[in-house]
Amino acid sequence: MMPAEPIAFPPEDHDHRRCMEAMMVRVDRLCTELRLRLTAQRRRVLEIVAESHTAIGAYEILARLGGTTRVPAPISVYRALDFLMQHGLVHRVESLNAYVACAHVGGRHPAQFLICSACRRVAELESSSIEDAIAAGAEAASFAVTRPIVEIGGLCRACRPVHA
Ligand SMILES: [Zn+2]
Ligand SMILES: [Zn+2]
Ligand SMILES: [Zn+2]
Image (cartoon, rainbow, N blue to C red; front, side, top):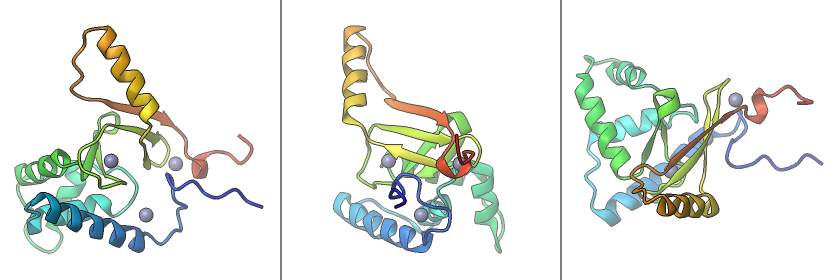
């Protein structure tokens, strides 16, 4: 029997529309709960980022936003991304200089990312033991953590040779 595909990296052929729909339901719930104003522009940017599990760069977002109408100013994309990141709907992946939609939509939270260097897909871990270790190490160093994000590079199952 094949082991169950870990949720973190869904198979490439999974029904991503359902994935996205479920995410948007959680997003709408969170926005109502926190009284966030998800403007049409912010929603569109979030949808573009969430279109795949692959990290997407700001200029690609901009290009897709343009689509049929005129291309919006980059600053408006960055503003929308700032809003989405501030509320934990989108994460910035520094090592790729790109963005991914939050897999959990639970508001702002510390995260560890597994980043596939071949396909740029990104999965989120939410390990409280890693968080605790960072907190303890930082405290011992009298260090005030402002960005508790861990980025881990590697290869996802789909990008690994079969017997590796
Ligand atoms: Zn999906
Ligand atoms: Zn997240
Ligand atoms: Zn991969």
